[in-house]
Length: 164
Image (spheres, one colour):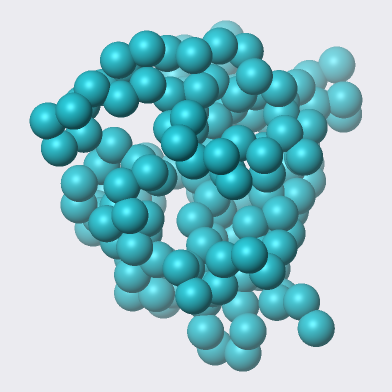
């Protein structure tokens, strides 16, 4: 039986924080070097489309959207975050989360989703492509992580439902 994909709430933060920290430690998920507080995370993500993958009370992964700009012209553009606990990877949880995130985004008028993924994170790039994202470019030496310049592959998905 697949895990349930449900709304993520403040009470989930300890488990979400732990999964986020795993992604930070692995070094191919984010430029961040420490996980934010709940208050900071909450402030930087849309109030909708915050999802948790659960088996019983255990959070196996999470997904959320961040606005890319405060400018009105970009109100329908959001950046995707999808994190799966190391012990739960390879079970299709990322796909379930991303597919649900896409549905939620469209129901809230988001017309473009974007993701910046390290090129070494081949599994994440494939997941996004499987869910309709396309590569639109590579941002070379866009940021440093632990003293090393890193590239990101920029992917986007244009909704066929929202923003018409």
